[in-house]
Amino acid sequence: MSKKFHIVLLNDDILPQDEALIPADGSAVRYGTGCFETFRTDSGKIFKFSEHIRRLNRGIQYLSGGSIIPVDAKKILGQVHKLLEVNDLLTKSSRVRIQFLLNENSGYEPEINPNFHLLITALELQANSKSLSLEPVDTTVIPSTSRPTDLKLSNMLHYRNAWREARRKGADDAMLLTQDGFLAETSIANIFWKSGRTIYTPDQSCDILPGVMRNSLIDLLAGINTLNVEEGRFKPNYLKSAETVWVTNSIREIQFVNRVNDLNYDTDSEFCRTLKNWFKDYKKENIS
Image (cartoon, rainbow, N blue to C red; front, side, top):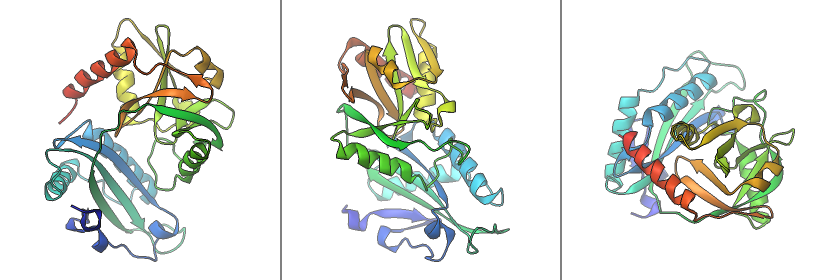
């Protein structure tokens, strides 16, 4: 099916994407007042679906001040499966996005019963196993004092800007720092690295978006008795002693990094293969 005739689901209605319209004069268009979740499906199955819906509902509550009833996970799951079916994706891997759009009409003033839209899209996911290069950029993460960092809010243009900075430098993605110079995340993923028997990753005080995949990997690695997991605040020079670096998100899952600035890393070591196998088993236990 061509992209032009891709089928989406808007407010319970299945229709071609060109017919999925929202009001032009609303806060979703004016200010980007919305939140979203993205995740992959594999033959119709989803890894930790309930965690994505819980975060989506936290975003809805934040944006609406609690005036909108949380979405029902069971209903959303049924809609996702229906959308996969009409797009011929039930036996394939796909990238699903659930987008909440708040349509208040009165500037910044909250409304008691605001209008909103829920848009669900699904596209076939192409396999992407290549390693990444990362480049430090001037754009920093936004501090949690300015917006909740644990929500996937629509208005996150700093990630877009950081990615474009990195691409101009010839890298695949950006390495973002906190405003006080600590390692944070990339424009699309959380970051991990291994040095000796210890796995390191920035903690939430670094204003990261703590992804579902990140939290799952910490849970997985914490159960490996030959490894230690340390969350904290780390300066970029910590990467000089890293043997392996990788990033995680719900679409790409685990993707190894071959370079950060002028530091190079092995992406095909025994540990890399073992980590992939550990996650493969963990995923089987947490997919539905």
